[in-house]
Length: 417
Ligand SMILES: Cc1cc2nc3c(=O)[nH]c(=O)nc-3n(C[C@H](O)[C@H](O)[C@H](O)COP(=O)(O)OP(=O)(O)OC[C@H]3O[C@@H](n4cnc5c(N)ncnc54)[C@H](O)[C@@H]3O)c2cc1C
Image (cartoon, rainbow, N blue to C red; front, side, top):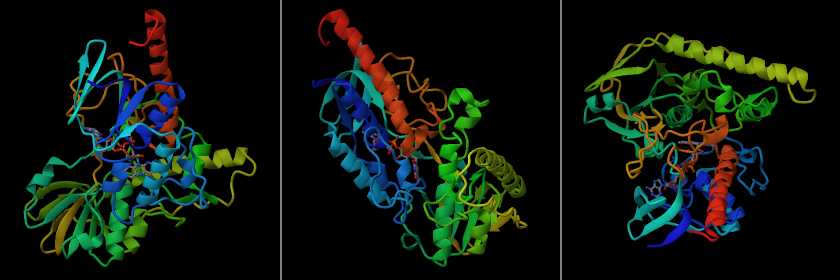
């Protein structure tokens, strides 16, 4: 049975950040991944995908973007290259193509079962990604079988769908980008819009993420927000990795030919029914946007040189009279793309740390079971925790804990257990 001090499960950016912080503290460890470094960026993104965060906002422990375009947006392939270079830079002990099938308590530590070995370790860090399974609503089972359905993670390009129109469900980052791409490719597109966080790509001459970083929004911690559960359930950002100033809001989509409707509430064969909540949804997103822009304006007023342009708020979105029911066949719709978010999924975790919704119970990534940690969780500590840029703080915090635990064991036992 191979043994090590810490097993990190997952070689995405969070697992690699963890590995680098453990290496910096001389903690023996391995990183196990069912695929290769950055597997999700290789296999769960569409062909034209670009990160929605600018290149400079991909800081990892001991690593940052040094290429020619700090304000640009990496493609998925470029980001895989970025992560692979990072892993090589400190010789990360990644064991690729190693699927973790089971993690269980064993004595003071854990057994980590893979297809060809059982690792014994004092600590385990779960870095398998918060966005690991597409969250498809139960009503999907009601869709007629002659209409194709797939998730945003399974979507590749317009040409990979059957001919005809497409219903895209969900209007956060993935939904709006896929809807836009399909409309530009000449497809009739209906977009069912639920709650979302509307953001312009640029404001007052700067990228919106630059402002979020400057006003401290990304660094706000879960202990500082009035409603932690609500904060963890916030809809993801309606942003696309493009230099287009206005971004991709519902109005831009409408002008590209996308027909926007309310939240999908029932599917019966080819009949789709929608809630009449579009005015409310759009209004709520507008109010959140107004609050954010006011916060930015206040920061800009107090910080000479911050703004590089005048306030240029994006126009209020005109809400069309939306239909409550569409016959998908009559409308020529041949496919449904579920861009309805993701959920965590830990079927291999046999340690009782999950809540009723299957999420890991933790504080700052530390679970109630000694030695079991997680990284990359939604608002794990800071709002940025699920973003590439946020992992560095959580990785350092957890690595300090693991190293301190190891130091205690060395002190007590006069040598490593
Ligand atoms: C569509 C989309 C776009 C995003 N865009 C951005 C963006 O532009 N900027 C940004 O900062 N963030 C973005 N995010 C958020 C976040 O950065 C990504 O979800 C990121 O991939 C999470 O990194 P991670 O390391 O936590 O997990 P992942 O990248 O998901 O890595 C987890 C790893 O664990 C491995 N794994 C899973 N199960 C097992 C197992 N049982 N055994 C072994 N290995 C296993 C997987 O193969 C994978 O490599 C985006 C998320 C999504 C879904």
